[in-house]
Length: 298
Image (tube, rainbow, N blue to C red; front, side, top):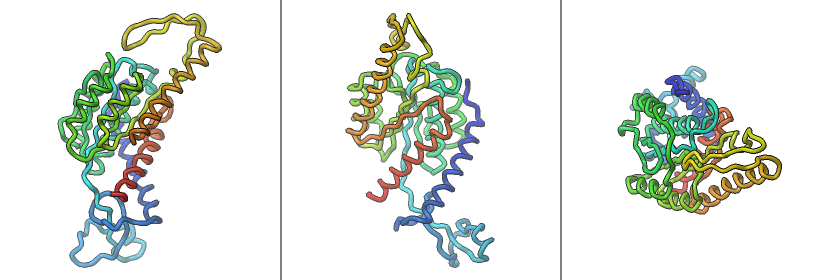
C-alpha cells in the first residue's frame, strides 16, 4: 500500500515528542561547554540587551515574569545517507508489515529527522548498484517527492552489498551517518566487505525481519522459492525442519550483528509486524545517544 503524505505529519508529531523528551533529560544532565544556536538544548540564561529575542522562552516568561534565553549545543554539520534495499526478497510480508514498505518508512523517517535538525540527507535505492533518488535538497518538499519515488519502487533482483557499498563509499566526502535498511539476506562475507568500505563513517544497519520469516505460515510438503534467483526447493516443513530453519535464521542475524560490531558499526533488528513509530523512536533514541557520545569525545 502506498505511503501517504500524512506520514510526514505523523513524523512531525513524533519528532516534537522526542525533542521534548530530550530537552527534559538534558536539563538534569551535564551540559556541553560548546554552546551555540544549534538544535540540541543545553541550558537557560537570563536575557541581556542585544540577545536575539527569537531565543526567548516565552513559556518560562509566563511562569516567572522574567526573560530567559534558551541555549543550545553547537551542532556540527552532518550528512545522513539513507540506502534502502530494493531487492526481490524485500517484497515480503503482508500490508504494512511488508519489508520494503517498512524499510522505506524507516529511511524516510531518518531523512525527515535529518532535515528537521538542519542536517543534509541523501536517499538512495540499494541493489546491484546504488540509485540516488534525492536531488540534494534537504527540505519537506523533497521528502514529498521521495514519497512518490519509493511508492513507485517494485522490489526486484538482488543486492550486491560489497560492490554497491564500496562504490557508494567513494562518493562520501564529509562527516556522515550511513543508514542501510535491509533484510541482509546475502553472504555475510559480502555484507562485511560492504560495511568495511563505509568504515570511515558512522554506520547503522537496520535489519528488517518480517513475522512470517521467523514463523512461516506453512506446514507439510512445501515448495520454497528464492525470490532473487527463482531457484526452488521442495521440503517437508514441520517439527525438526522448522526448528532448524529458525535456528539458521537466528544464526544469520547474529552473524551479521557480530561482523557489524567488529567494524564498529551499529546493528539493530526491527520486526516489521511491530508498531512503526515505536520501533523508529527506539532506534532513533539509540542513535541519538551514540551521536551525543561521539560529540563529547570529539
